[in-house]
Length: 169
Ligand SMILES: [Zn+2]
Ligand SMILES: [Zn+2]
Image (cartoon, rainbow, N blue to C red; front, side, top):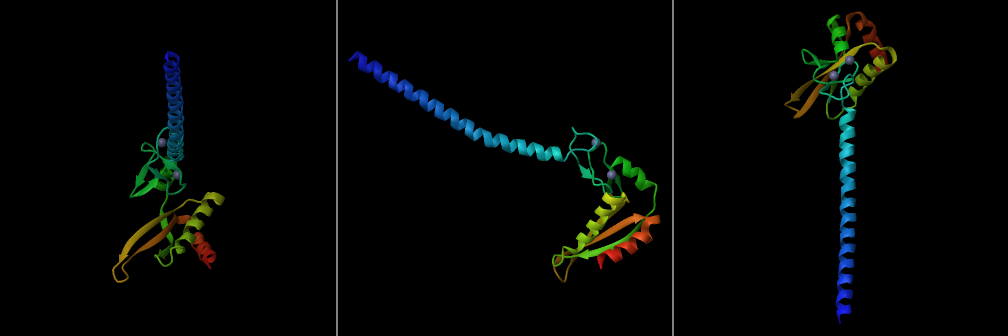
């Protein structure tokens, strides 16, 4: 009889150990996706850190080079966000509007030409330009219109304006 009681206790103890192990494994399993999730969150955050200070998170991207900048590096010129380097460049030149494109929800792709043109100028030729988007609510049509305008240095303006006209055809 005593042996039977001891055996029962051993079986119950083993059962509890197995339960504990299952519980532990499950806890581990539910932990890992969370871990992965937080790692992912971290990497997204890391990808948007200052280009000069990898420990600081970015607050804006430069209108000219599109590099991300932290609070310390961020420069603002009349609402245009710039990195320290291009703030210097920006302040030394007169800038002129060279092209504008109106976009609306029916033709959102129209603005892309301007973005592509700007990105290509910078990546291929390091010619600085910047875009400004103005929003306007069209009351009759009940939609938001946006005007995307491209600005270039005065000395580049004529030549780039011509190039964009050729490019868009
Ligand atoms: Zn820049
Ligand atoms: Zn910085």
